[in-house]
Amino acid sequence: MSIWLGTSKQDITPFQPVHLAGFAHRKDPFTEIKSKLYVRVFCFFEETNKNPSLLIIADLIWWGSDLVSQLEKKIAEQFSIPAESIIFHATHNHSGPQTSRLFTSYLGIYSNSYIDFLEKQLLLAIESAKQNAEEVTVKKGATSSDIGINRRKAVNGEIIMAPNPDGLVDNEVILVRFETRCQKTKALLIHYACHPTTTGNNHVSSEFPGTALEIVEMKIGNGCIAGYLQGCCGDIRPALIKGDAFYRGEEEDVKRLGSRLASTVLDCFNESHWKDVISAKVHTSTTVLSLDFEQLLSDEHYEPAAYSEDLLMLEWCTIMKERVSVFEAGVPLKLRLMTFCEDLSFLSMNAEMVTEYGLKLKEKYGGRIIPLPYSNGMIGYVSTAAQLIEGGYEAKDSIYYFALPSPFSRTVENRILEAIDNLIQKKEREEYDGLSINE
Image 1 (cartoon, rainbow, N blue to C red):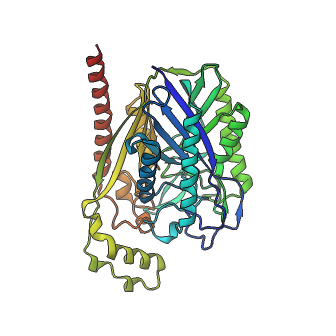
Image 2: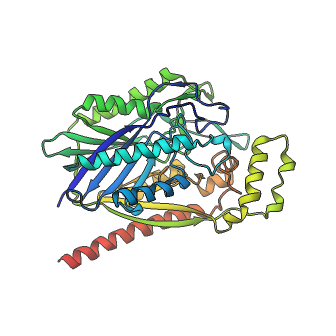
Image 3: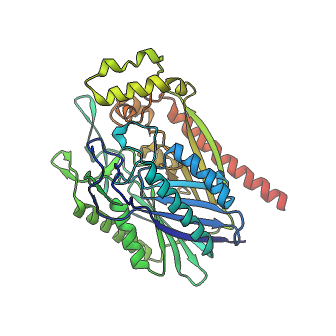
């Protein structure tokens, strides 16, 4: 057996002004479209049309958890592809529409009409990808980029959002290449960890990842579809620095950073240092871990009247008063492993994971596990135990935007790493059992 791959790319640029997601300072619908947004679909088969699996990548901030459930049902009905065989991944683009109803309005206002359009375009893309499947071989390469920098800096005993050149950062760029029998590159996946927050303007844009993809697709040619896989970039942003502070760039900065990443990718692409990945099927397995909170208060502690002059806190308290009982069991962190072979797996996570998680996973598993946060929903930031002690936006302040009742418990880091280890070991046992039966 061998892997077959079908690819597709559909325009998901909003057709009318809607609110964009990711920045609280945007108060109105977008005013301009700087570049188009796309959804890219990679449909894998064991053989022609057998046991399909989907990797869906969109120029969005995330796929809302509420939206994912809806889309999984639609895809199962129309294509008979089970939810367990799908990864919905987002580039974490902050210049596209909101896709979740679960957060405060400061992260962007949900548009029903846009979501209807997005669903329609996604289903068209899946149908198109299924129609052009070809047998492919898989290759893996790697290079590096210094576009991103750590954004957590200790100043006077507090963590502020500022450039920290001494902080952890993951500069690795991983490439996964899919070639047809005639050695045409059908698809190229690019994995890198950096917030696409070059600009905070109220304009639709696919940000620097979109710019890079457009250049790469044009240079490779022959209908190649390139996809950007966002890594654990929760505390990493573009290194746009003046003095000791960050600044927001303009469209020319988006193009400049995107061109830099594309040049890095293409230099690696044109080299001969590729590792063959021997794969005959795609295997998926899933586990769900409940993340508990530092503390949960009863609903009478969330009194909106106490924050009448702070609109964010007012909205947060109103939501908490309605929902706090829902959080008693914690929130579900969904981990899904999409495995091609022993040397290549994607690990999806429905959260904003800080960079230390990505680095630990790469080190422990020798680079064979590629972490994909911003996948299959969104629950909010997941920080390390040390960061939860330190504080700062990712660990504590973000809860008011993501409508969470409290920071997570400091125990979650070890529990997450243990759950990932168990998921990988389970997959390896299943593969061993399958080989034993076949023998």
